[in-house]
Image (cartoon, rainbow over all chains, first blue to last red; front, side, top):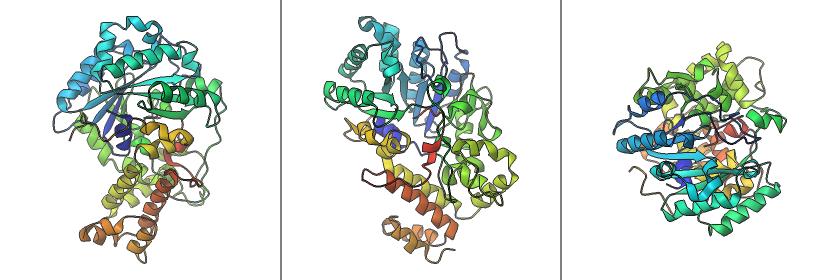
Length: 364
Length: 70
């Protein structure tokens, strides 16, 4: 499963599901967006197992992504959830900091089984990770996985297109793996411990009202304790989430119910077509909308005019067509479009390395 | 309704002529606001294709904060 296939369906509502299996991580990266430590919260496996057990052959996400913290602190859970997902027809991916690469020769059987039990493994790699785990050690594990036929990618973080670290590491990846291993290159964010390294960027303030769809409201996230939210923004995941983005808890929801909410909720549909600033700007005299994209979303529940705007926009007889066209237009941009919008655009081409067409592992 | 939704969408690069007659009929009934919405989204997509030129204002989720990126 190539990362390009996963990113290409990112705008499709409920096509994917994030499972944040633990906040714990044995590393202590200075930029960690989840503030993870080895002593961080970790709940029982039950909320995740219960939800995946509700996947059926006719109603399941196309893709489940295991994240954290460090999901490979729970290799048995990763392996079990991946196997159960596969039975329903869902493909799986995990992102890891590669803590086990410290001792390359000693990747345990349990870890190896988890690494090869999913359809894709993404390795976080950046200057902060490299202070704890050498690049060569990570590359050695990646090479082993490639030999075993596993699909692998890197998620690289840097300060921007001019970051010399990114120039160095992308050159190294291309040379070492002969352009066969892709990378999603993203910008360091002022989130979690990253907020200690950077000042928050100035909020983006539109000067006119125009649609700016929210892709992040397409795939739900199961948070560390089993709460299900409609968005993967770290602040929403950390909670408390705003009421319009909280879908419930896995103790009370099946996948079919979550998917139905994500696909059918009028506010979420409006967010995915028009974006939060468009809705909030419905307030008389509020053009431009209050600054900040996600900040605007947080304001929606307190703004009756925004909620009225959701009703006005989504009850038009043509809204279904507009919504589908909006999804199709964004999906047509594919993985490269996603990497350009959400990553460092100068490195967007890296996401297509090694891509030779849609994976056979993907459900038909 | 927009003055000529199909023509406006076609001018913005929307593949109107690749659609079925039924789909074109529905698009022809879109309001000005709906047409403007699709044109705005298409402009963002065009702007992120690999070619020189400025990005449009905003940037969708690109303006978000604290995102699990994919």
